[in-house]
Length: 401
Image (cartoon, helix red, strand yellow):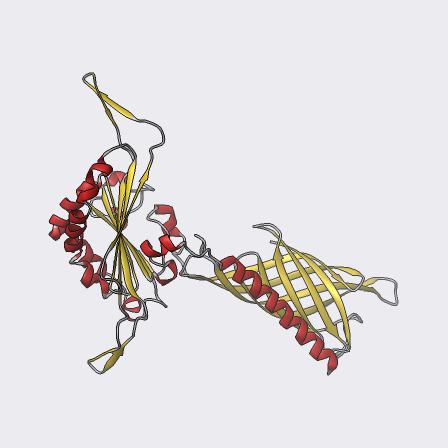
């Protein structure tokens, strides 16, 4: 009984070490007080959409819930208000070269709004010449962000069902424009703006509408895309003009959209290698299946994955028989393992088929799979308990594939 307790403690210790390592991966730096005033916390973004507007403008929506689309329909009024309030700073904005960043924070907790101006200098002075006339050329777009904070929503009842209460009721809308002065044109073109918002809202899946935290979503809407924007060339133009995924992406880069195109995947997991059993080096083979689930929320710009697997593994041990020849004795374990990320996983196995004199009685093991290379090489330290948990010894297996 004491031996069994020791084995369980070893397993718990391995799990706790594994949990600490993965928690460390997810740790993110806390924003500065200034950034906290003008940026929505990333962990509360459940919907992130990208919509393209006329004149190469782009709108990025980051929302807690889909109901906030209704309020954003009237963002043109907020834009007009901002343009009026920054008129005192107009001369400073127009002087100099480079791009301009304007942050506008609206918070119900305060009777005032906050504005931040930042200028990013260009990478060198760039000029354009035409008919012997020389003028500065601006390549970087200006950025205007609206960060709106409301008091928490209350629970609502209707049609016999209860809607969820959102503890955090805020959103942010970011515009990337050729010149911040174009914001007035965007606000005046309410038809185009509302059409983009209606399209994004109407295409949201039911899971995102009911519980966006569990079912986050990202969409990319570009009605102005042409055939030249289609890459690779055999892709559909409609797929470029609108695309949606059941997860969050970190940018509208086309390659980034492949990161969560498949959230769940069943994979074959075969391995060959060598295992050190007591003082004996034995050939090793393993065949299993793993369910891989990609996290729908990025941590530090990466989509971490969880892995749950079951496998059958065999140590092929050899002993001399009475005739002096070697007999092969396979010893088969059935294993369950789990992991988060691609580099480490924890598991336990049970010996269901024993042959030879290497293992006696009830035998089990706990192990770690440590990825040494991204593809093809895994090191697995083990603790094996045999003889009805009366005998313990370490093991080490090197797996290929």
